[in-house]
Image (cartoon, rainbow, N blue to C red):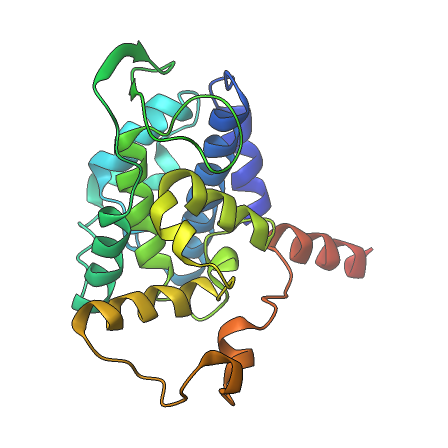
Length: 236
């Protein structure tokens, strides 16, 4: 289950060197734990659940979770996570707006992931985001955005503000454009429509739209950890 996989990943991680890398590690643990739990429940590959190919997962485990056993991921037989057109468009949107690194300064993250100077961070303090990690997150976010729940839940995050912090850190230009705190899935598709030169909304402005709550309403709900706690309490 999610809670078990998340705990195992956190126990197997490299010690984070600052607040920013600690947050990245938490996000990765959430995504991987969600992928493992979904793979077990639905009989699919972790690559299919996360949108990350086997090579990316190996690199992530090596760099961030070196003590995590590889067996649960079953990567030897895992297929490449082919993306359909819709998912690919969301991924490309994220990639276009990811934090752009400057010239590498030669630093390295524990475990061998190269680090480079980036734009000013919009969330958290510490190391700038790693370029490869941002690309992997773009793929994972795009894959999970195809699911039915709120995006922060689909990613396995603990609360919605974590999603805002994630996007602010790795996709700051995209985050800066969401000035009205639109739901992130809605915002992604709004940006895609604008890029194609058309709009789906017929209202003259968001303020008078009858579907306002669908785009800007609270993204309430229980995190996977909270759901586990409730199930344990009910069983006690």
